[in-house]
Image (cartoon, rainbow, N blue to C red; front, top):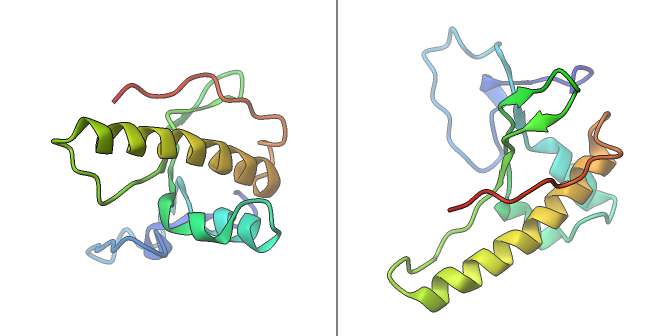
Length: 120
């Protein structure tokens, strides 16, 4: 990402990000274009782009990216256990797509492994 850094000005293709202007050139940990590149290369399905995009919060001293927040789901009835279960199953499948995209499009992620899923 250092060769093509994201900034707050170009935060996302799907989310609106409003700034006062002074933040627009600050580097951002947001990953977005990487998913588009992976879809274009056929690594992930094109129809998954609407659900993939987000950020990472830290790199460990061992070089591990932690706390990736990359998969998003809308249209879930949170009062219905079946809807929640379907969303969790789909979300976990989309995590695999996200990981494959990162391995393809982000230098340093070539050997990335999923350690665990967040508990929601």
